[in-house]
Amino acid sequence: MNRSYLIIFISVLLVSCGIQKRHYNKGFYFSHSSNSHGSKAIADSDKSLEIFSSSSEKHPDEIDVVSNEDYSLTPDFGDTNKCDKILFRDADEVECIVKEVSNNEIKYKKCGFEDGPLYTVESNSVSAILYRNGTKEFYGNYVKPEKTKNSEESDDYINGYTTWASDPRDIEIFSVLSLIFSTIYFIPGLSIVFGLIGLRMFKKEPGRYKGKGFAYAGIIMGSLALLLLILIFII
Image (cartoon, rainbow, N blue to C red):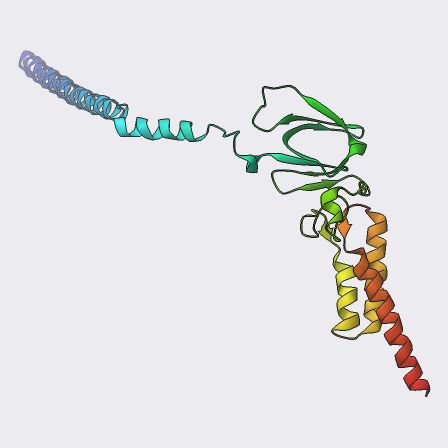
């Protein structure tokens, strides 16, 4: 009996020692693995610091490029192509920067002198504003000023402008088509219709278009051609 107890005691003791050995080995294993990962993390940290340091460096060439761009953005107020133009009814005009436009007055500063005084003119003294982006704004019918010495020498003095080409108004397209269909294509019906549409456009937006005579010429010539065709068919 005592012998059996002795064998059981020795067996339990051996099993206990084996478990302690496994625990010791497992703990040693994890300790070694932890140190390995720690070394890897430190290496990665050094790499990231190195990348950050190299990316944050400033190269002289890049600085020069930025400074050149800043310099090119400085506006050139001496360039008159970047200015607006106000055309007055007395055939006068001024290069300026339009600041405010209302129904009764127009405020502007002289081109190249934006720090200078603000000028104000009445809208009824202005015939048109030509903006720097190509937009045109007209104010009612043009008032033909009294002929000057220079204008008397020219028969094409139209609405304050010395030539047809210098008149900034748009050509009314229906009036032109009316004249074309009455002369080149000889279709009197279309010439009369386009001429009437052109006259309606002049009445709807006075002062915006030029070429009103084309509409009258197209209507008259189209009417005569239509009358001639009727007489030919009757006879």
